[in-house]
Image (tube, rainbow, N blue to C red):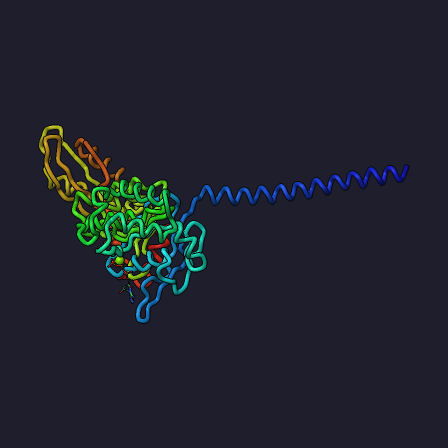
Length: 374
Ligand SMILES: Nc1ncnc2c1ncn2[C@@H]1O[C@H](COP(=O)(O)OP(=O)(O)OP(=O)(O)O)[C@@H](O)[C@H]1O
Ligand SMILES: [Mg+2]
């Protein structure tokens, strides 16, 4: 009897512990699956951590860190000599970092350069095109270098030519192509192996407005399937093309954020446009200015224009003052009609100048602004 009880108990304990072990394994598997799932959902394609490049006399890239999500187009901005090309050359394994780490699709640029190169297409500042080669010949040559051959290579060359609209110059010597076409051939070679990531160093530099539009449309059409980092000095291009912006200055990261967030952040000292009308049609600009400048937080009121519907004024606020409510109340209390009240859009150009100036003026300013950017 005792034996039976012990046997029952030991069986029970056996089952209990087996159940525990199974549950623990299950939990481990779940947590592993959860990690895989969350990294898949997060879809980070590029991670840069404290990346630094020092030359003998200067530090071209100084401890920059950022992440780029899969399928995004990121604008890489900075004045001349900021370190954009150097960063791009490190990401594409053309230049070893002095310190720090960068990964592309999870592969380390220093430790797994072949895996990185398989997944990356690079359009350098000056694409290395051989003037004595014809377009088709050159693309086939580059395709071979990238490990493509036979029907697949022919198909890829065909697709890249179509996407970059260079089919009509397939048989032309590269040396005889215009700057715009040379740039497109450069883009075609970057796209050839259908890489996950495209790194484009000033893809629209030197192009005419029509070519700029076409290249911009092409880049936009590549988003989603490809993750793209493009450097440019044309800020409107970034506003139109990119979801995210990375700004560097003198090798340091100044900001990394979405275009929208950067704009609203720069609106710390916000200005608003108000259109005001009076019921009897008589509205004196001086009276409006005087009344609105009394609103707490307002720093300056400027008359902009008079239209049949009313007069428009720009109201500038002191940093961090949000005066829209008080402004609307003051206008209505003065007996005027408030036809419109809207924040003025801050261009990326102004933000760029503001951020790069701040960094130049403030010692250690980069870290401060970077913190604010995230
Ligand atoms: N091979 C090199 N040896 C020494 N210094 C270099 C070298 N290449 C670049 N630099 C320096 O590194 C800094 C960053 O240069 P980089 O070409 O990355 O700037 P950039 O942001 O691409 O500028 P731009 O907008 O003019 O293309 C500059 O001060 C440049 O002089
Ligand atoms: Mg450059």
